[in-house]
Image (cartoon, rainbow, N blue to C red; front, side, top):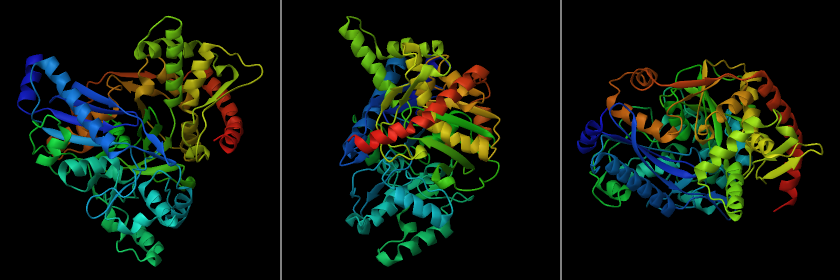
Length: 532
């Protein structure tokens, strides 16, 4: 598509926007009628630990989305000479799970509790047992029940609770809805894209003695599959999103989704026997199942849904790139002191490839990237650590390889359940997210850790925001075609795919590192128990 054609689509309001709230970045991606990214904007942010709760404020949420939108518009205008004032469709996605509870007047009752919080262990265990279904600590229902167990005063006043994507969508449209993928991380859903009615009844009976004025079904947002009518941008919502106040209302919105669902869309992984790995601040692998898992595994494996309602298994780890991001920043500071200045991109491009020169087992270096707790390995809180054996080979290539390895340690723990215990079969596993941005680094390391071929698309760096834009495009262009077929025919038919097969020596090297990683968890435990 030519520059002039794109400019005409922007002017005519034919372009589609996806916005995703990631853990460290809010990103807006604009696509044309060929579903190709044409402009983007972003806002960097970071969660705060306030009174023991990982959170973001409502002010940060508003500032972030309006800034990302403004940057996207500026990018589009600079590239194509046209100011964006109309959109064909819009979609909001965000980190899944967490807890945002509101009263009847729309007031947030307690600060937003993000997925990163590992404070719901008791609720997670009791609900998993009650439902005979995995309810991980991150899930919204675990947060609600833990608040009940804690006798928190706000619970009696709840009128509605939702996820971050659901909250932003509500502000933009006035509609209390969620895409089925995001909804499935709040409460279990059934094959009809509705919340499981039997489990709702079980929960209501569980808390009946509390005499709350509400029933659970009254608090949950409506559950919608991809392509559904999820409302339109209101005049108030347009002003909230666009600080200039010129964006026209009436834009159709897709059902708001979680980052798992947008990752599936962005990697063409919504059909059975397909899967994807999303690796950034957190990391998770999604596999669309052919049949149900044999048991719950104490909540270590999430059972969630694709954006069109198929069952998927998710192995999720709270920590991935966050710790090596901090090390690379430190190396940049050291370089500056020595008189050399590098951009952030230069540091990553120079340092991460060194990992491929390191020893296959990382030379006896064993870091732990537990900035926060890690449910997969049994930690309610974390302490980042760096440990090395007495005969370790302590050099920069080994250090970088160890950092990339440990970013996948908790994920591998979960994937061993799917591969070794459930014998899940997959035809392809596609990677996306920041872990894969550095060429010829993330893919071979991930292939070694997962001991399976890993593919990446040319659009891997766009990740979830582009996936959300695709779901928004599907909202207005589906023509009743199933999502998997629509993606295959309209988006990925001519996609450039790079696939890396695991090398035997790399797999053996990761396995050797992983054996030490599991032994060293006792060191991490000691650090958590003894260091504040």
